Image 1: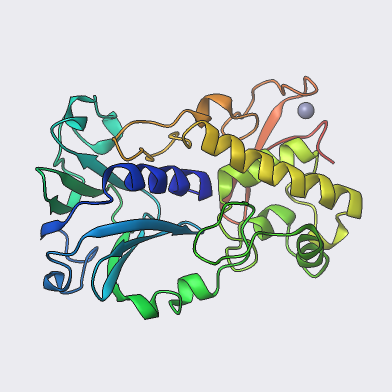
Image 2 (image 1 turned 45 degrees about the horizontal axis):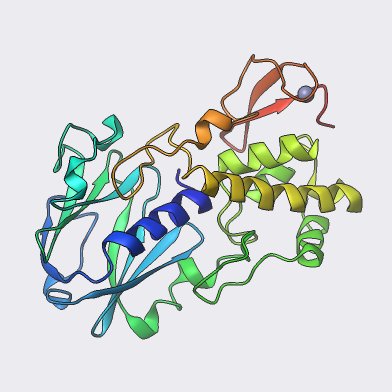
Length: 288
Ligand SMILES: [Zn+2]
């Protein structure tokens, strides 16, 4: 699932390419993904794009905004006469767009298109009145984010708050890190990587983490999020950027997906278990 760095990467891409365009038409091929009355946004101009946790807000002129969630395998790919020369990742579902995964197609002005692709079809696009966007449960219930440059009024996670969240939880630390209501934006990849660097076992009970360990983990979470963003997100699964290209962070994973490989820190072996229903990777030797 795309996490904070992937959604932030897509946001920056949409800001660069889609902002300034008008929405001329919307073709909805899979109604489940976009159920609202599209006439409400026809003719509206895309003014800005914001991110909250793993969600996107496409701000439009007029009364409404679009709220987009990629869920497991959603993509948003922009194509116009200039960008269509870029070769698409195989993850978009074909050599050209629309592909078999293109379920909602926005026709923009100046000959551009914006494709919402989704292999597994869990993602959604909603039309929301501007004043009601912040009241959506998804945004209202989002915890603070391990990211400094938030742009929709959401709070940056602070160390004392992080320590308090840990001290009150009986959950395994990795499960807690992925609880969007406690901390926004961290998913499976970044939770695994941060715990590996902080030398903490994913199965440790959150309230048993020492103050010193919590400080280290806090630092490492920000570090892996920044690293993910620096490499344009990770495309080990279905994430692609706004141009339909893969990110590169998967080439720099230390623990996630590295089962049976040698640990780059201590020479131990990376092990995989299931925790909270998710594949969990760690080094038994240096993570305690
Ligand atoms: Zn190790």
